[in-house]
Image 1 (cartoon, rainbow, N blue to C red):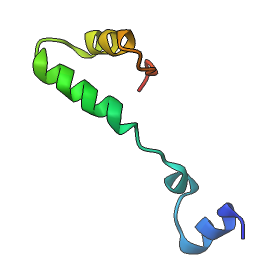
Image 2 (image 1 turned 180 degrees about the vertical axis):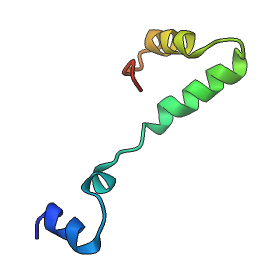
Image 3 (image 1 turned 45 degrees about the horizontal axis):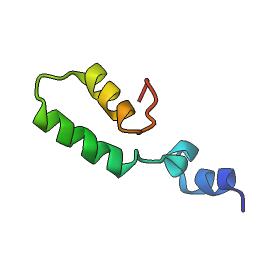
Length: 60
């Protein structure tokens, strides 16, 4: 049975089945930096994570 038919049969959206959560390691590191440097905004957090080698989309 295809994914489309299975989702239609149970009445859920196909994108719900395909949703991927963000990587936990990036989220933990972002929270740690935000806790250490409370005045930093998302732009500076992005720069710091990029310097540490994390690949992060600018829209995420």
